[in-house]
Length: 332
Image (cartoon, rainbow, N blue to C red):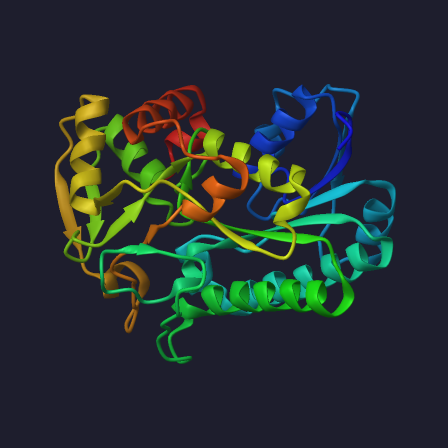
């Protein structure tokens, strides 16, 4: 694959997208970003905003005419645009379903039309309600709750994205690879929509209580955004990954109780830890998955990727970013 590529990032002004844009521009790529700024921020692109090889289009991935023009002119597409964050999903389920399914359908159809290489970002949420604390492989079965619980709308919408992507590959030969992301964290991430690490860190830095939902014994694995984008680049640059799903995440599992204490230790904060029932945080009937941990054997075998940054290093990077950005410091 040529060193210089013309690349489109949908959702490129978001947390992950902006880091990816920086990496691609640093490698000499010409980058187009499409973002409606519903959760992304132009401020995320401050470090590269004046780069002559960056082109920013403020519009929706649902606007087919705009997406058509962009995909026509590029060589490859990273499709990151999606409704994300537990709070946003609970508050706006219609927006979540429409953005995730219809937006992906537009991108898939146009990448098929113009024969472009595509990476679709999915999520570990597709595994559903996991009770066991074991590493999840890409072909494991999924376990979901009732459709009356809006919590599962995001997982179901991303599941459809995966089905559509693989169907286009098998039926039409679409050159697509799917990355299932497990709790990507790092600088520029906001706690506004429920992301737990920046929410804990922002509160710890200003001495506010760290609010742990439920018992705090639910566990997650957190992958630094720098490691995540390295994985995405390797996946799209390796032709043999086409038509396949890959987990992208850390294999270090921590409970929310352990995470809260680790944040206090790393920030030197004297904040207290308080417990908030799920119903109080998200409304009656909310359901959460107990555990989520990836097996990364497949991606390691395919492209040699493994995460390199520790959770401690990531928390330090998040804290530095929040200290430098008042807009993030005030969000909890």
